[in-house]
Length: 328
Ligand SMILES: [Zn+2]
Ligand SMILES: [Zn+2]
Image (tube, rainbow, N blue to C red; front, top):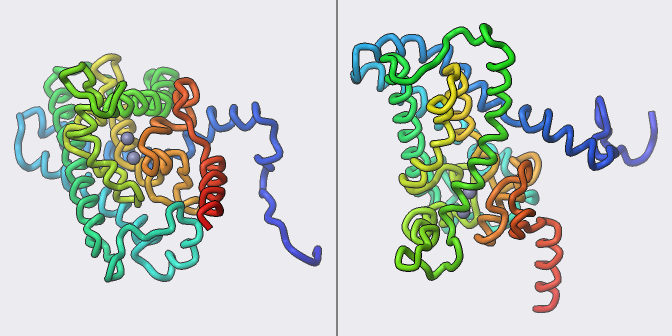
């Protein structure tokens, strides 16, 4: 056994030593899908345990029983996953203390006088985030209710045997992640000012109007935590969840809808938790919250580089340190 300072080694391969092209290929072909296994797991559970009975009951019209089942499942996913993440990084002293130095913004956005709880904080930030994230899950439940009703009553075409068309079925499943990144950039960019923050409907800047009246609510979490993920204005939720409506354009299996929907429900947790590894490590979207007008998208399909709005976290940190030294 070697003496001295131990250096962690990768068990299977050394990703960091790979050339850039190999890392990009790996990220694009494998890692981006692996990162969403939890979202897929929720979709699978929902399809397996909720869909058969709700589908059968939906054929008889809108009734409280099956709709309540959909809502209950979605709220259970919300409070289990968002609650667990919040517990690990903020609420539990045991787990949150050692990872504190990994927080992007060192100020705890949930604590003024009192330690943060599970659903409330002395700063009021957590209550707002939990409330609007719950509104988000209710809206995604409405999407699920309407789709289930449409399938059950023959208004939207579908096929039920996933393995009858394996290439088609798996191809669309893999497509979900790329589609979500593409869709997210454009619907998100559209609700930030198009040319001028002071603009509005009078000069055709629909983005400035939507930012002022809707998206600014999401940006109240400029120092985000897990619950900030879906803390959005209901109008933004309605726009955001249109990513799950692919079955209206192509004939798909219901699992494609469920995967896209739960991708949109669950992925924002890691994107907003405010921590580097072992948190979600999303410095990219953290900077969007901290600086407002950079990094509208995600690194995988990088429209920000293309349109000149990309900000690198390492560069941002260097610049910040320089300015702090100047002040001294
Ligand atoms: Zn934004
Ligand atoms: Zn965000």
